[in-house]
Each structure stands twice: as C-alpha cells, then as structure tokens.
Length: 498
Ligand code: BES
Ligand code: ZN
Ligand code: ZN
Image (cartoon, helix red, strand yellow):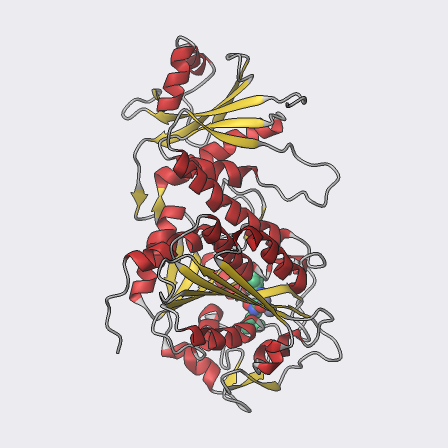
C-alpha cells in the first residue's frame, strides 16, 4: 500500500483547427475527458487565453477529482506527416515536443505520476514523456521529482511500451555520455553495459577483452590508450534475436574514448570537459543493443566498442610515431588528437571476421562535422545506396535526422600520401573537409560492400535545438540505431555488388 502522498497529473493534447484562426480540436482522449466534465475543459481553454499554439502548454488545477493538475499541450495541425524539407515526420516530432513540455510542467509542480494522452501516436507520446523527463542528477544532493508515466485513454499499450523502451535506450546513452570521465572509465562503461544486459542473458553474450587486444595486434587502438593509466577494454556484444541463428548479423561499431584530452597534441582547455562524451558512439551503439534485447527484436546484431582514454604522458604516442594496425597497414600518427579513426580502424578490421550483412560505425569523430551541419543531423558516409536508404528511412521516423556526405577519392589522397607509412591519420594538404578526410581514412579499413560511418560529433550535445531533450549530452541517434536494423532484414539488399 502506498502511504506517500502521490499527486496525479494528466497531459492532454489539442490540435489547431484547420482553417480556423482561433479554433481548437481536442484529441480523442481530451474529448473524452471534456465530456466527463460536461465541457468544462473546452470552456476553460477558451477563456484562459489565445488558442494553444504548437509546443505551448497550459495547466488547469482542481478540475477533476483524480487529477489535481491537468496540462493541456498544443500539437499543431493534425496529420502533418512526413516533411521532405525538414527530413522528418512533423506529426511525430510535434507530439514528442508537446508531451515532453506537458510532462516537464507537471514535474516542476512536483507531480509524481502522470497519465499521458496518446495524441494519435502512443509511441511518439511515450518517447516525448520519457525523453523529456530525463535529467542527469545522479551526483547532486537535490534531485528533480521522480515522475512515473502511464498511457491514458488509449488501448495501444504495445506502441506506448515500445516508445518507452526506445526512449529508455536513448536515456541510457545520455547517462553514459553525461557521466564524468572519472566515473565512466573504460572498465566502468563495460560493466554498466554488462549489468544492463544481465536480464537478457538468454539471447546475449558479452566479452570484455583486455590482453586479447595485444594478441590481436591492434596496434592502432593500443597507440591511443598508451598514455593513460586506465586499461583499455574491447567490448564485444552478441545479440541473437533471430529465429535463424545462422542469419548474417548486423555489425555496429562505436568509438569509445571515455575522455579525449587530445593526447600529446593536447586540446585547448575551454570546453575540454565535453570530451567525456567522446564515447558517444559506443554509448549509442551499446544502448541500442540493450534496447533491441529488451524488445526481443528478431534480428542478430553484433556490437563492438574499443574503449580507452586519450591522455598525454611519458608513455603516450608522439606526433610522427608510426604504428601498425591489425590488418598490417602502417599509420603515421601526425596528430594524436585524431585518435577516433585509430581505434575504429582496428575494430573495423576485426568486425569483418563475422561476415556481417552490413557494418555501421558511429563516432564523435570530427569537430569539422559540427562545423558543417551543427546539431541538425548526423553525417552519414557510406558506400551503399541500400544502407543509406535504410538509415534515412529510420531517421525520418525517429526525428534524429541524417544527411549524406561524400566519399570522394579527393579525400582519400589526403590520407594516403604519407611520408613514413601507408597512411597518415590527418589530412596532408589541408584541414578543409576534415569530416570527409576522417571518413576516407576509415574507408581504408573496410572491404565490405555495405558500410556506413556516422559522424555524430555535431549532434553529441543539446542546448535547446531538440526541444524534447534538455540541455546536455543527447544520446542521438540511439533510437535510429534501434529502428533501422529491422528494415535491413525486412528489405534485404537486392543490389548486386561488383
Ligand atoms: N573527439 C574529437 C572530435 C570532436 C570535437 C567531437 C568536438 C565532438 C565535439 C576528435 O577526436 C578530434 O579531436 N578530432 C580532431 C581531428 C583533427 C586533429 C584532424 C578535430 O576534429 O579537430
Ligand atoms: Zn581527438
Ligand atoms: Zn575524439
């Protein structure tokens, strides 16, 4: 029996009425609620100010005995659907934004339990609620009100639960990215993921590797970890969800630099703290596998995360040093701050041994990606039109957004013309197009026909660009990484490869 005083809240949606300047159109749940109150809600909405615009919200108190606080949120126009210009589903984005705003208003009023209107799309509503309420305050004495949520006035609990799982996946990535680097070390990262996968042991195998890294001759990865006191970890996850155990897996690889100081090519101090999130690739990849397991998706996925710190020290790799990657290629490390491509190079080589149907690597790889697109979209560099298609379709649904970037030979020349070794880890002639140069470098370690590199440096953190994520590390594009694997199995590639 609950003995605490639980305050109940309700979030209801309203659409703008087509063709009417000030008209409102209640959702099914809101209309039902209005009816039980004999029209009180619509009356209050009329007298409390102008018609609720998209993203705006208003709270009414004491109008219903079960719900002392009712937040009404503006959903914009009904049935907007996919917007080609914005590259996302506007209806879904509006629902996420509105529900998140409503839930946060109630959270600020210290409401403990919120029932939420499906607003016509229970999954998006659940995502808006769970993403909007997330706040990293684990290390603060004073915490925000913990709010539990529940679907209201709809029978579509399956979609609601799916939305909750998607959002919880992204929130796990946000938690790992936001957490300070002295808490989320490579070892702590691996342990956290192991713990999260515990309940799914039946379909999941986990390998945490230490000395194995040397046995595998991953000289590029080890050259990055050398300067740190924290041991590097190579995390390998196998999720076997497909009824066909021999089904070729999808391979996800995430950059796992738990702190990027730049190494001997030390970064400037301002905002260096943000580099605690330089494991965003590993965080989103591993969180998406945790989510796939929780949802029991009928697919096989392998996740790889080379985890280490990039630090300066007497043992650290020095500019000009030459190291040997797992595939035998030699690399002149002219800038120790271009470390992401080094750890990924070895992980990508190793990943090929699983004969995956597709390889997707995710990395906070370059500041240049942030300069190019900012937080609007993840940059996708890929050799496969089919894979691009799958990623793009999924990102429209999730609202994460992706944008295709070029893999011209032009950029390859930047890294292959090297004085001492086969490859240079930075662009030889110019810093221009740095995100593309980095992609060209990774490509030198890929022989698979369906590979995509996602540069997430620009979307790593959120100020107020994504309205349903608070300020902080974003966990993007975790939901897209959960959404798109299903598509790769539903519409397998028919393209013949030369
Ligand atoms: N982790 C950084 C990239 C980054 C920057 C991510 C800002 C998120 C926000 C990466 O390891 C790095 O330092 N890249 C260098 C490469 C350069 C030395 C060729 C960069 O972008 O400056
Ligand atoms: Zn770096
Ligand atoms: Zn980095």
